[in-house]
Image 1: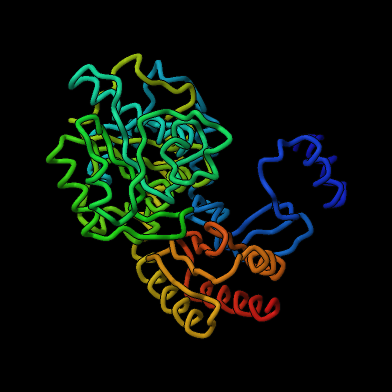
Image 2: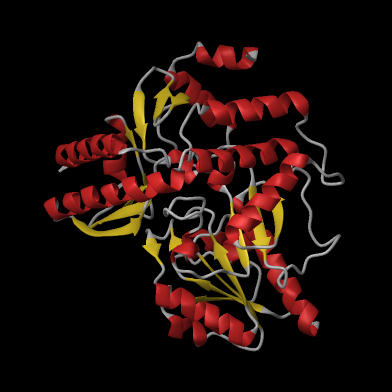
Length: 406
């Protein structure tokens, strides 16, 4: 272990956090704990306190902590080859590309370092596709209100929350916003310049709102009619979280472009955007990434896909996710301050008639890690290995925490 880390560990928690606040850019309002290790469904802080994790690193750690098969695969690859660049091929990324495109019903993949970068690639692909058709550079994209696609300039431009955008304008132009699950509001915005429609099949940051089947199928028909590319952002709701490998598969609707990340690498920085053959407009020189798809993250993605299959992860999400839904429905029925319950599988939310920040903090104090979606929705996005006993423990802590702050 680095001596710098060892020295920090000799400090009190408050002293170590003070060091962080002196050096890190203050773009997060962090909880006052230092997480140090994890095992299964649990995290442990620097003082040895144990936390049941129903956040999964914001839907990232699908396999739970200290998964030996995943860890060993990554360790073995570290000893063999970590990085080369995209001037060369490597076996792990080839295998991951073949498997991922097959699972997603796509044809081509570009590996990125994050979900935000995947969105950037999806936007560029859509614009290049339209440019190839007519040579114009004034094409438009239709996105959804209350959506979230990332913090970079392109991803922020298609994020339907003015609060995130206002300090960074002007953003990229030609973006219009429609109402989620309102097909007519989308049709009203379509022009001969529309090149793409982008949305999350289940909105995450916006409050856990699943799309309706009618909406997604209507968008698919509209895009087919107008030769518009349909982009699904599966970064949070994909990779098994809904009980299907990708949430759009619950509706039997395939996009032209799909973005994924988070659970694809289970903590290693890997994302991807995938396209059908028709939509694969980018050619050599149009896009690139120094680290994207290197042997290390390719190995991580393959290990994730192996374990999903071997451990029947999707089946667990379907079974335990249904149990989670029942238990949250019971909580809602018992507490009038809860005004809504939405979601499926391991992406669910409870909506309150008040801000939930104090409740989330109380849950953490009581050994349960939860996060919000917006100001008044608590988000339940545990590792995909969660069992009924974990749901029961979570519900017990949640209700106890609610009682103590009311």
